[in-house]
Length: 112
Length: 113
Image: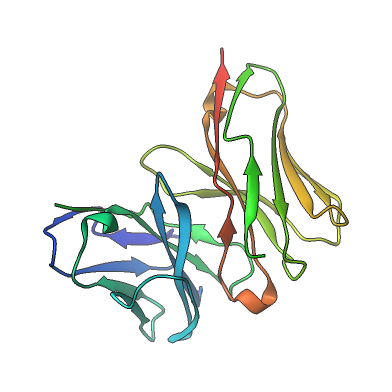
């Protein structure tokens, strides 16, 4: 069974640009969550999607958005990038949330 | 009330010793408590998880101890090996949280040969 796949693995963007990250969950998993990981703040929850609906959202500005498609694949978008958005962005999938969640390798975003 | 507090921040253990990492939570609605292991450059990997209906769960060298009244849980790594050197995160979630995991700040474990 394939694991959680995140693309791309690495990204370098310029301040003010926007970026889209992709996550393909484990087959059969309907819940996809996104997290931002930084050395200073640790792992912080961005949002969670279940069956194409956003079920929960963390304390991030509106520049961070996401969506989920009918095949459970998810994308997150960050607009008007700031230097502080440089982080490892992780996606996790689970069957229905509040159960075993499996993480992808992450997308390392660097904003210059 | 949403926080999960994890200690210690870093831990050095000799090979063959026991590594103990502790976490505390406030929200009594939490009912799922996983531990993750993360190596540099990798995503967190699910290690072991527990629900409040049991006080202990063991998988190989890894054991979770859970104290519901104290709102604390801990990870014990028996016979620690250099390959266990990684960052460990505790987390918590509840049914009303959907898929949202609240993570502790992490513990950097170093096992010396």
